Image 1 (cartoon, chains in turn blue, cyan):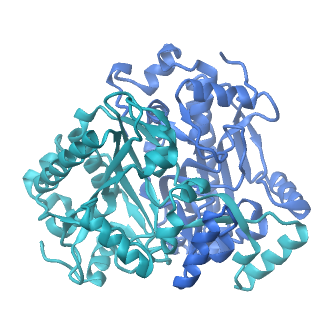
Image 2 (spheres, one colour):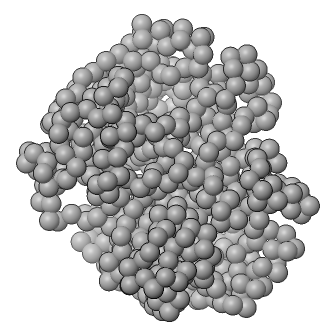
Image 3 (cartoon, chains in turn cyan, yellow):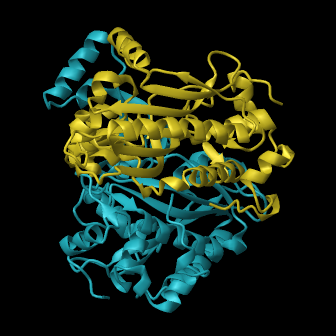
Amino acid sequence: MGDRFTPEACHAGLVEHGLIIPVGAKGIFGRSAVFEDVLERFNLLVSKTGAGDRAESCVFPPVIDRKVLERVKYLESFPHLCGSVHSFTGNALQALALAERAREGGDWSEMLTATSVTLNPAVCYPVYPGLAGTLPAVGRIISIIGWAYRHEPSDEPTRMQSFRVREFIHAGTPDQVVAWRDQWLERGLTLLRGLQLPVAEQVAADPFFGRAGRLMGSNQMAQKLKFEVLVPVISSGEPTAICSFNYHQDKFGEAFGIRTADGEVAHTACLGFGMERVVMALFVHHGWHVEDWPAAVRAQLWPEGLSARVTAP
Amino acid sequence: MGDRFTPEACHAGLVEHGLIIPVGAKGIFGRSAVFEDVLERFNLLVSKTGAGDRAESCVFPPVIDRKVLERVKYLESFPHLCGSVHSFTGNALQALALAERAREGGDWSEMLTATSVTLNPAVCYPVYPGLAGTLPAVGRIISIIGWAYRHEPSDEPTRMQSFRVREFIHAGTPDQVVAWRDQWLERGLTLLRGLQLPVAEQVAADPFFGRAGRLMGSNQMAQKLKFEVLVPVISSGEPTAICSFNYHQDKFGEAFGIRTADGEVAHTACLGFGMERVVMALFVHHGWHVEDWPAAVRAQLWPEGLSARVTAP
């Protein structure tokens, strides 16, 4: 192993070895017990890596208040990736019409209306409104894991519509936040290299929509606001980003009224590990059977040995 | 403690003791590290309770192939609960119009089109298509935990738009499936009574839409296809269902081509614990601080003692 796969071969390998379960729609497959065990073990390693941060931790559901998306201007930058949630609020007659439309295989979606929520496109978004007010002098660090949604249906297994991200968020002064981001860039590279993944860091841009978006991406790169850690997984195209570091400057501080202890608008940064992508990179580089992975990698993920594995959810 | 709360008092208690984090939209609050620790401990107790099933386990994302919802005729019974996912697929000019609409606080949802997915209304749904084909003689038992969505925005904290359910699913012959369901009803009651929750079982109906739906609900109750385990949490209305047992007869076997070893259409049953509701019931009945919970309850949830708790995600 260690060679990159075509998208088809990577998908076939994951399916044939019982690691993912295709479901029809693109990018929303099931994950097997073995896949989940690797993911959970990696999550514990991230927790260990970040233990010094003494982060507060919390969990948010996969949907988010629609107003948060509006306040962070998500629709201006990423309309093509959003997932707005719509439901039926009509009367009995309209319900009959909806059911008939669905039965006939027609488009029943236009008979729905928008709910108060959308799918959450970035696991850290629900955290910022909760930081409103004045931070302690050291700022605040939050640890979170959750499901993100991006409307990017694809047969390429690392490009999912629904996936988990383990994130840390720091709100504080610009100096605090940038120093912490730089420290985590080193921590992340060390962690992933310790798992014998051939990672490299790179200045990056978010996938902004359209021509105006390309300009926003160029500005973002020129200011070095985003870094990604990449690893080769798929043979076509760029290496796969498995970890990303974002310095938002005062964007969320302004949007949600977050202030530092001395009354300035707080700056924020976040970093996130793409959990399914890390797991897939491990299988692609070390083999389809965890029993065959290098001993040094297994020792980190399963310090008490593979025989102690719990593979129930 | 032990008294039921008004919806407002229950919500206030959860917020004031740092257990949930309000976010604006109804029914999609954050969960604190302490809340998550109780949830995870209860999840482990469920796994222990079901260990004899030797279930296969897997994880699916919070969204599901739109076609599954159509094939199980969800829109005919529960249109008011569905969460259809819509995104933007237009051009640059339309994107500008969308962004402007959002900026002005207008309804931008009508400028979107339906994606291939909806939110998953029942954690077990993505499992059934994967059971297509012929089952082994003993049938198959699947264990799963995941996020469900129901469009039921409410200030009552146990009524959420987005919540987790731990489920077990059995596909097999009618005899296998009914005996297993009955066994789990006993197991579930024993588990919850062991945690000193004053539970009771009850024949129940799903919340079908409209007048025709009430008839479907009556039929379901007459056939005793659904049982719920209830516990008093909120002072107004019925006790809260924290566990539910559903016998689907041949519904999913027919819809997805699941056959028993001797070639009949397979029957299925599932049972699910409403994880957030169980956690809330424990706090309401035993107090807002886990340190004060009855020793016998703590001994089950934290067999190695409260001091060994891990509250990071």
